[in-house]
Length: 257
Ligand code: 13P
Image (tube, rainbow, N blue to C red; front, side):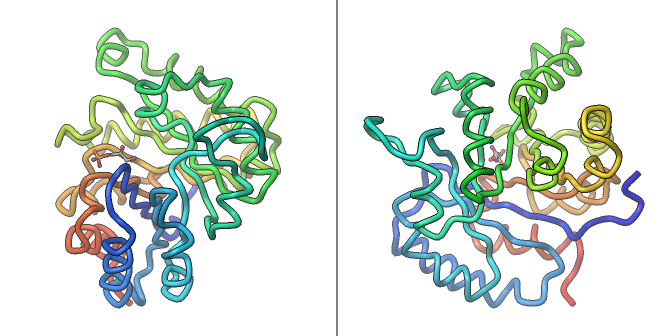
């Protein structure tokens, strides 16, 4: 399966960082450095700056997206942002079910699932995050946790829609810890996810779906992680905050044309 590797997808997840002027400077500085890169560069920015940096991103082949959304188009949901609003502001993708949202804001698989379906409806690519805690891994429960999260986050998504989704495997023990998964562990988990998709949706869907790794990705481990057969991309938090390190992650794995 997946004999020919896809172009690598590298997503910067800024989390709650950057002002509008800082974001504009970052995109302006990054753009010339990634020109000709074989990787597809995505940027998940905070809501406030989406419409401000959308033209800059469009001009430099950076795919712009958001880090969360609500599952309704509109309504009395104080403080929430809809997928429709994200599209309107220039976003083309959205991270959903990030472990920080699941843990800190108590988002359930069911809520994530409703958002996934809404994102597809409004034309956003959902990047669906899954991952196990250290305790779940230590107790031998990783496979159960991942398949449960996949089953309920993707419930009702059909085999045509699954091709428009990305899955991000982000083990919680690797996020922000400087302890990325060993490449062989990432490969094993990505293969597990791909087999799950194959079982549910068939071989074609399993080959088409992109499975990204996230958790302490840095310039010095990006290459080896991205060389793993079933790693189609990287979701980068801390190391995406500086243009210098993010550019290295984007360019090292595939090289510059
Ligand atoms: P770090 O790269 O800072 O570990 O964060 C990973 C992450 O949560 C990306 O979504």
